[in-house]
Length: 176
Image 1 (cartoon, rainbow, N blue to C red):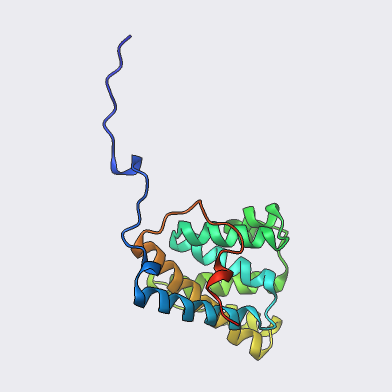
Image 2 (image 1 turned 30 degrees about the vertical axis):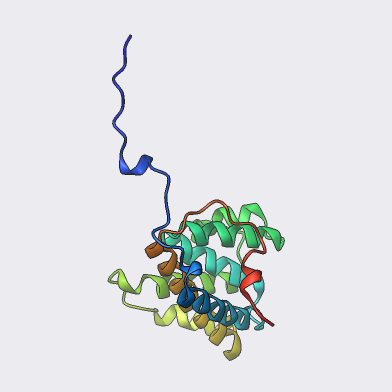
């Protein structure tokens, strides 16, 4: 039996970046400052596991392969379990997240989806966040959600490919 050759589609092509932002003067300076802002959040009292779950969930929603890859690998290196990482997208149906993590994930989803005709952050969600976190932790959580959404947009626009990130690579951009 002879089979006809399949016509290649755009989905068959290996993703190539549109631009390497880090190779530009402005991009490199921006990335360093952006990473330093992220370090401020990382050093807050907001639990690291919560930070990682929020970063992963927002990246999934935004379709950012690079950030999804990075945050999955960083969380794994920090000791997060595969079960929890695999269930982040289905957190409402999973029993492996604390009430505080659920509140943070709900805030992350609502804060990420504001452009999807979502009414913003629901009062009920905000009340759950207030119940589980103090003001400094909430400030860090809100900043984290803003930062990961910005990072997702940078990488999606630049078409940064996923798969080659290794845990710890981001730390190279940070300064003390």
